[in-house]
Length: 378
Image (cartoon, rainbow, N blue to C red; front, side, top):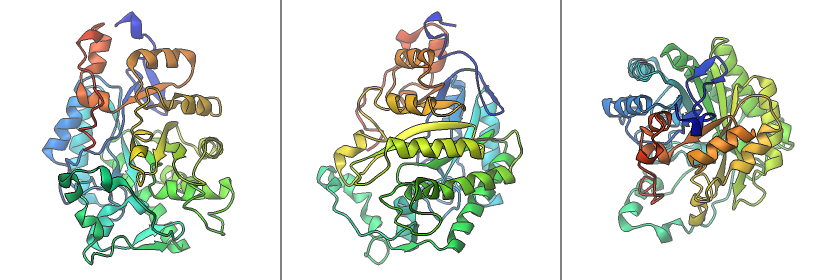
């Protein structure tokens, strides 16, 4: 093993998972699933290649806990029914063959659930919101705009929202718990609950989108209640050695009265007490402002989220996962400094899935670098 990356390539532990190194594949939507929510051979082969490349942990792309409700992509993995079990089981098996662990990132898209709009389904929100101005379309090509046409829905009126009543909240919590149980049945090592990036759980955490006056709104503790009840339900539905992680925002960029770091620090302390095994620290940018997309979550500034991870690390005892354009040498030093415990990479592992193996072999100069051209996003 390369002595240059002794911290990054050292074994680590998250919950019951013993990981061969500190490199995590960050969840990225591939659109490789079938139109019916099933795993395809292309999707399974993609994750098998990442496992073969040497990463310690793979976080499956964001997947619909309540599929088809809450889906954010046309070809999104479903976790809501037993019919998805054979493909998910094969996926987990083929990742495990190569010594990696895998967790399923479970999500409900909330206001980002474009597939609900396309199908004419109303979208749940913590509070009703007025439409806002967007300058995103000013920077899209004609071809890219074509991908958004269906966002108007079958009647051309665009997304239709409703404010969640207690029944809807309970049903969604049950959906996450059932999805986690299915993930464990399929052989996954754990789940990561996506509580960031404008999705439904983040909608409850954010004072911008959560204007409720009941027990789910108002104080930071109340806004975290939905997440905490999901964590409790997932814990109840799975075994003691099943890992539960969360991904959440340390900040919402270009969102008036959005999530700030102090909100995040309160949430992570509550989540730790509720029994999560790790905190995956990200951020979100309001994509109505096109430039925000490269502020968060796909930060263009090198190491742009390290300060966030460092603050969370000082707040909790469970492992912290850092992410956000962190070069391997910076990740090595950050782990040595105690800024975070694991480094998640997304675009770098698209450019070269063999990056972890090349670091372990002491051959970093052979790595094919990500040049941050954003074609993967487009």
